[in-house]
Image: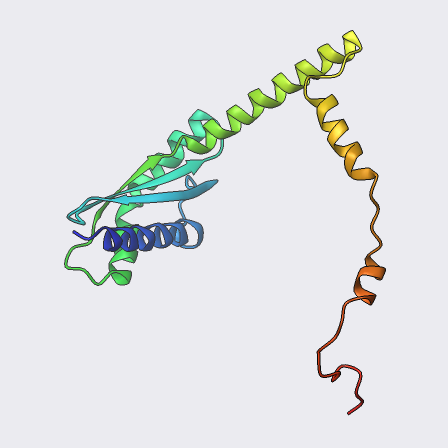
Length: 165
């Protein structure tokens, strides 16, 4: 099957699932859910909808159980959007990518704070800051005046800019 058709169907599934989860599902278990992407099999029979669920492990499991029970509802919404012979069977899967990126950001922030604290205790500057300060100092020597640059630019060659109408 053509890859652009699979990509279009995946996008329709993602949008439909996101709208159904956000606006139509009334299950109190389904909350703090973000639909990140959808993957469709080549024969358009199966679809995985990847979701990010914020909260504790218990809340995630409860939300996933609610999404599993709402899969048929999402499929009926999808049937009205797709014009294909079959409606893909939807499976919800937790997308760990968002959580991994948040965790990596936290680790980087902690490490940079630790390095900054070490350098502050030693009275030194971190490597690379001296070079960046030197580059910044070079740019400070030349000051430009924006108003002078615009006044010297010529107008149209026929002088129409100076002619009153």
